Length: 223
Image (cartoon, rainbow, N blue to C red; front, top):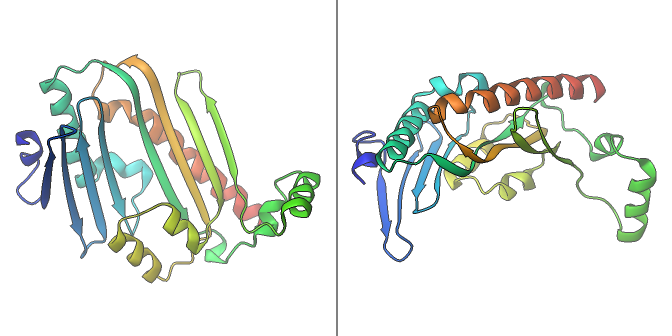
């Protein structure tokens, strides 16, 4: 509680201590700037989430004051409890993108990325396809694993992601016609963390930035 409180007098507007699960959590919603942050500290898990209706440039993530403060707090928690070995550490991005000036992309165009016989088989047996997407898993030579999902963005996707209520409403009200969604989860398993969490995150951040940039370009040319 002290470490979380030391992040700043106004950083967390609410704390909660759940004795049964020995969980301490903090939360804060900034409706004026359209952001939300959450942190949960449990005996075996540490998780924090930052949402922004306006978005945050991936390559500038660690320079964002809110995120930098979160990483600093996580570092202090790791040092305080002498945590060295991790079962899993990761960073995840949910990116709502607008390509081709935000013109809605019909699912039929995404269908072209799939084998047409496969699409036809599903369509004939189950009925009209309402949504499509790609999902891939893999691992790089640096032992960084990934789970990547992408596809056309619809209003239903906003509900599926379960964004904080006020952030979700601001996304809807923004007027920006987003048409592609990227869900990128990069993680490493069973390893010893020998650097600060923020430094470890540099690799996944750089890879995510490059991937999103390349895919946006690819989709713009193809769709």
